[in-house]
Image (cartoon, rainbow, N blue to C red; front, top):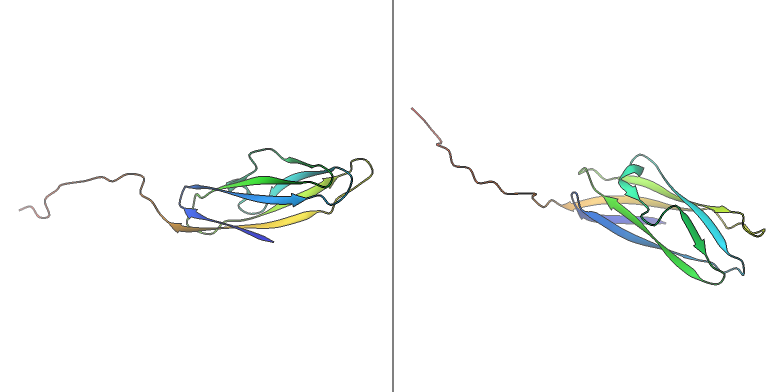
Length: 116
C-alpha cells in the first residue's frame, strides 16, 4: 500500500494509518522508517504500536518537505511476540509530492534601472 503526502514546500503533512487486530490476543508492533528520505518522515506518538484484541488503532505519520523533489521511504511494522502470538510484518510505501510553494516573505526593493 502507498501513502501519498501532498502539500506545500516546508509544510508538515500528517496521514493516519489504520491498523486492525482481528485476533483475540493483543498485538504489539515496532514501527520503523527506512529509506532514502526516512529522516523527513516521523512517528510523533513513538515507535511502539499496541492493538487490543478485536480492536483497531491509528498511527500518525508526519512528513515535512525540505526539497522540491519527491521524497520516498518505507514504514515497517514488525510484530513483537506477546502471549505466544505474532502478527504479520506490515509495510507501507511513503511518497511525497510538492504541489505549490508559498513565499516565506515578500521584499519590495527600489533601485534605478540605469545610471549614467
